[in-house]
Image 1 (tube, one colour):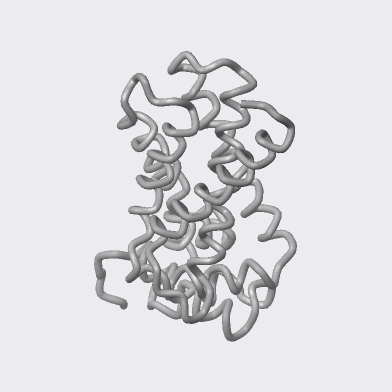
Image 2: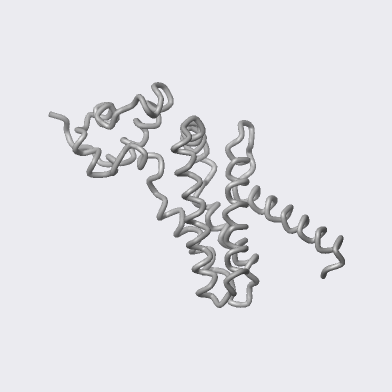
Length: 196
């Protein structure tokens, strides 16, 4: 009989990533993941509803990091300044020591269309939640949607850059750079149309 060890969800996640990387996501079973760390399949299902959840576990904490940044923004902040605060907070959820894990996870997602769809859904849900929080701050509907979608898009682009081999900048620095680039582009577009 296997002796109980703490950290079952983390051990299951680590084993799943290794198995998905070597055998493929579709070819790996929940029983094999559990067996890899000396647990039963029943124990696996105590922590995760299915094997996809191993890759998407922690979504609530990620969304909460965004919302914490939104809450931390001063009341007079513009919607885009609120989003910038949310991006800084969310970036702290991904310290540099987490990059290897995130790279391995993303490589698995990139090889599976259903997982890619799930990842995209995660960003869409994030934008919806952020838009609701912006409206609760008194931001109009259209501005809330635009700012929230912008935040999700900036995060997605920054995260992809952060995962690149050889990248050493922090996610916070990359997200700030991507947002600044977007603001520069929109400022140039407004100037070209004579809008201020």
